[in-house]
Amino acid sequence: MTALLALDRVVKRFGLAPAVDDLTLEIRENEFFALLGASGSGKTTVLRMMAGFETPTSGRILLAGQDITDTPPNRRPLNLMFQSYALFPHMTVRANIAYGLEMERLPRVQIASRVDDILGVIELAPFADRKPDQLSGGQRQRVALARALVKRPRVLLLDEPLAALDKKLRGAMQLELKRLQHEVGTTFVVVTHDQEEALVMADRLAILKDGRLVQCAPPREVYEHPVSRYAAEFIGGINVFEGQMAAGILRLSDGTAIAAPTTLPPGPGVAAVRPERMRLGAGENTIRGTLRAIAYHGQDVSLHIDTPLSARPLTLRLPAGQTDTPLPGAGETVTLGWAARDTRLFPA
Amino acid sequence: MHEPARQRLMLMILGAVFAFLYIPISVLVALSFNEGGLPTVWTGFSLKWYGALWQNADILAAGLNTLIVALISTALATVLGTLLAIGVELRRHRGRGLEALIFAPMIIPDIVLAIALLSFFSLLKVPMGLPTIVAAHVVFNLAFVCAVVRARLRSFDWAIVEASADLGAGFATSLWRIVLPVLAPAIVAGALLAFTLSVDEFIIAFFTAGAGRSSTTLPMQIYAMIRFGVTPEINALATLVLGLSVTALALAQWLNKGRLPGQ
Image (tube, rainbow over all chains, first blue to last red; front, side, top):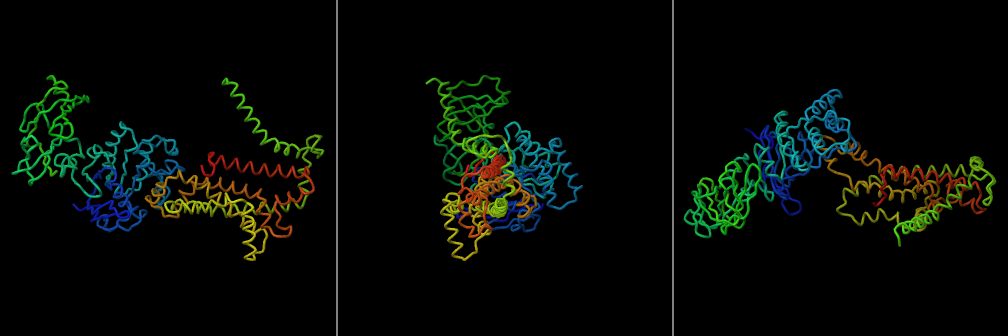
């Protein structure tokens, strides 16, 4: 499959510091793609370059094979949903949505029918004649989405689309965005710092760090097979044990050998394992520690365990339904185990 | 001190301050309606002094001059001041000093500005008259319009301009359909303020009007008349000017939602 939107060795410098450093990405047609990174990772700069508000210092941006690197934003068939929504405060909802179509000089009748259609899709028809300051945060977010979608862009760019919503609404909107993407059949590129959001929504996600690509893969692959310690720690929780690689085996500070499906060159290395892959009791890999606290989350229970083998307390996640057997009490010594195939090794 | 007593004292002080501020103005307004025309005796309500104004050709000519100067200088200052405010805001990262220079005419004493403009026009051998008064008024009005618009721009979300471009608008379209409408209340407020300032401005107009009666403005006319004593006619005229100024300022405040320049 050829890429719909591609970044080809893109560099963007502000002053001397590169905000985006030699980034190559390919986004496919009808894909829900997430750009994930901490603040300062360059993810918003990437989105702004796609939209045309920033020009790359070097490299090219291609849309369906055509070079759009120097095309101004108003001539790009891409639309951006702004983090602040950037609704026009002096216009009604209807006028906000119609604005982009008026710029295309479409006939009045056609504009009206397309605006009505999209108002139906986002379920805001009763609010069509309100001004933005008379809407709730969630409604404003939907107007911003509709205003960008009504143009039928080749790619819809979304800058932290859910950041301004409260937690409950955010969960609902994650699914809503995905449903909408299927319904309109458009390629979505979402920028987010929320890894859970990216996991839920994206077909594929790219993790950025300091303007560089860390990993680009489907969520499951990033979660199961992170390419680096950074990727492993960024997506989901993970327990990390530091040690030394020698003769293809990682040994922790107390000499424990860690069984793993892969190996590393000699030198310092870390073993990482997801909290839900650990069990109470011995396994192919076994560790001892002191139970510090138990936290009940409803659907599962997490155990926090101190061990000299890890700089941070370990987390162990057990489904709440499987803990009929009494859990150890705080202060007790516990044995933890996990399978060799659940171990990931990374250079330190 | 007891709380109620303290509050009574505060109210009394407040009342005294307002009395000090507004009793002279109230007296002036009242006397403009005094039939007898004497400042010491109230003989009955009458509009005859307003009628007398209407008969006075000098006052009518001066009033017309004032309107011409105020309207033209306001129009020029509004266009230039708004564009200046937008330009300064877009380049705000360099140019703190630039900003101080723009707002200086608001702070420089009028008499200094008046002498400076007089010298400047003389040096360039510009014939003085209404056009020079207009130019002089644009100098300080520009600063006031710019200040009012700048205050609004501080809370202006530039993302909406990017959104406009993203939706397909060119720069001119974005300016016309997004930036100007959102700034409109501040622009109108700035214009009303400029108009008010221009209508009652005396010193600068006096210095830049040149010789001859043809470019006499209303404040200059009042000054000329007052040399022979305060007449009820002057009170009536002052009341009219007051009414105009208060209306324009109230409108400006309301449009700007109570924000003053610099706030």
